[in-house]
Length: 116
Length: 486
Image (tube, rainbow over all chains, first blue to last red; front, side):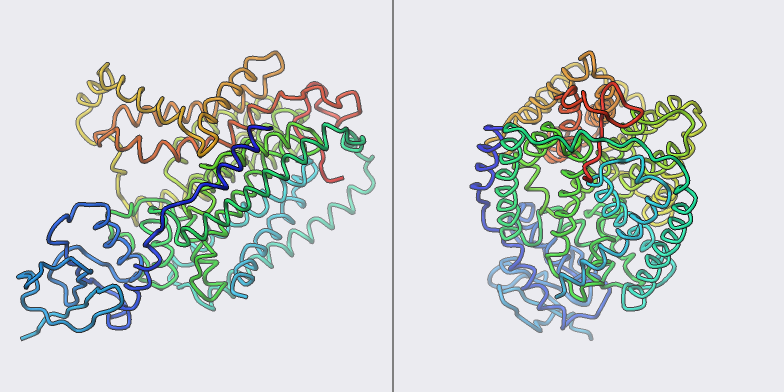
């Protein structure tokens, strides 16, 4: 029983690292009013370090925030989300044919395909 | 206020299931009111997840119409059960009174008070840990927002288009829907998507898990309070209460199924109708486990054998069909979901040629790598200050199973061990990166069997405590569950 008390106190004292999910969720949720209620939305991969946990987290939280839309990690759909730091500085060729329509807190941007 | 509205969604099916269990006589056989409440609350959530699925599968989105249909369903079920119960009371009032346990009426000793006091201290610290966990991660851990709550948002927001969730291959579209449906349903009752709801689901199932283990051991015994303290001492266990994933609900359905089967195994006279009701409830728990996680498929086999053993002991092996009847609603739902809506083979199952699979299973070096990784995870499980808890409790459960009075422990402990063997086979045969798979899943796999192992470890503790007093009629050798209803 003494071990139980020590372990329970240790568990109580344990602190977790700050979690960015809450902020990311709020930031991406702000894009919802500019998007159709459902359908595909593009998500620009990071120009560098695209395979990191941090990059995956950003994409997955964008999906979580914008459900029931389906956020796909590619260029092509009418709307494209460019998370903060995803586009290559100085002009990213992947954004050719898209026009910027909104920037929300956190620096995430929304683009729409420039229809002919 | 929204949190209270969500609670209505928990209470309605819980009351209906409670009344149904009492009407079916389950309340007279499972003498622990604590276990009955846990079964009613979580069984209610399990049943409502099944009914919600069939309602939305027939085209109704989650909205005010859904709340009306859902609330009506549980009120009708509860009313019918109440009517049946009243009729049964009229018939049974002429029968001779049953002998009931009186052991709990004995005065508490100093040791009893000491053990209860330590449990309360541990429980208070656990409450603090849980609150801190929720504040730190209001959206839960990675899998919560990447899988479970994400699906819940599709269900709550998507109307008939919720099915788009199954197009997202990285969020495991084939995972069963009990947890997402429960969260989405309670969000609908709350009227808002508050993070408190998925956290509350974890806390309700976590509390019910502790209640099932302690109630199963008999609240008037020291062993129940010790087991409760041990359960709550693990930081890893507590961390998952607010992780908003499906492992705590799965752990509950597993241990609850075992508690009911063990009670049936010990305390029933051959041929009574109560055997049927208990087997039905135990089958229901197994079915809900299946509707909670894919691991339910692994759990189903050993639980089916345990139910068969109970049926044979009751004098008629065909009674196992009552257990099967409990499983069938969830099983059919899972099969329909997996074959028609989400026909996806889990990535960790072997998909190559059988020759390669066989070759891998005989690869000594591959096995040695897996053994070392699993040993490291197993011995390190428990959380801060509780490292090694899983290993110690497993050893205690094995020692208890090998003891002279350990026949029930052997029965209980066999189920998690067979499950572990199943998981080991998956690790051995998978074509995925097995070290990554072990590192990302083993923590939760141990968590799922943790309550069952604690139950097994404490089953023979204090076996003779207070046994000099008259106990209920059919369990003279080793009372498993005595009344804690006072």
